[in-house]
Length: 88
Image (cartoon, rainbow, N blue to C red; front, side, top):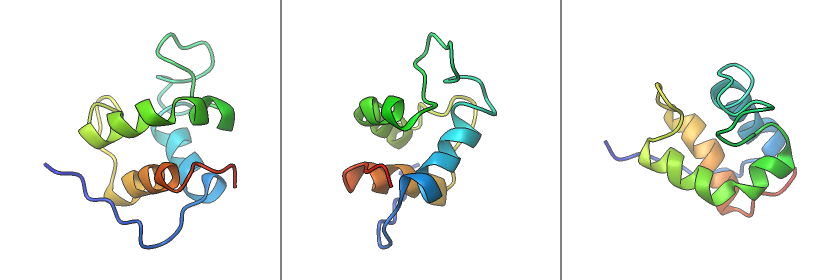
């Protein structure tokens, strides 16, 4: 299945991207929580530093493991990264 991304509205880290990371990557799943050997995606800087790897992995469906992101969640991450990944 080809992922659908809609970047028609701007995305912010605090409002759009961060909640997806919290629910799908770090806090609720533990995969990328503090102390993880898979990479820690808890703070803005950690996520920003891994943004290219994150973008590729969510677009090809390899992350998050064991589930799929909704189109809205995928768009929140990819559009935020594509717009420069600002800490906003």
